[in-house]
Length: 82
Image (cartoon, rainbow, N blue to C red):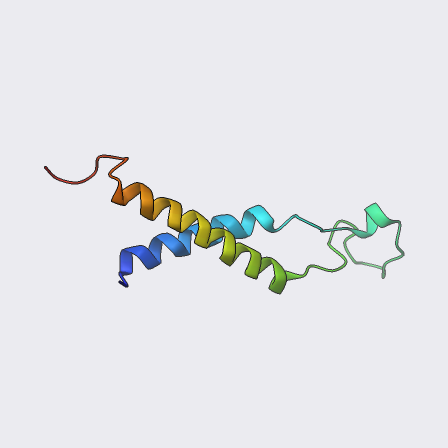
């Protein structure tokens, strides 16, 4: 069943998961002693791989969302009215 609240929770979880996986595998020119163009930032990642990280974030957010769904269904947080 689709609900706007469920989608909103997934959207927030996706952004949190994206920021979690963003630094994984990032190697800068300073770390690898690679020569860079003049004016370029030495701390910037050489290969950012944002597409792969977005997919990992989607999967991780899905796992988190299922956890939130099960917690709400089991009334772990006691948020339902009596």
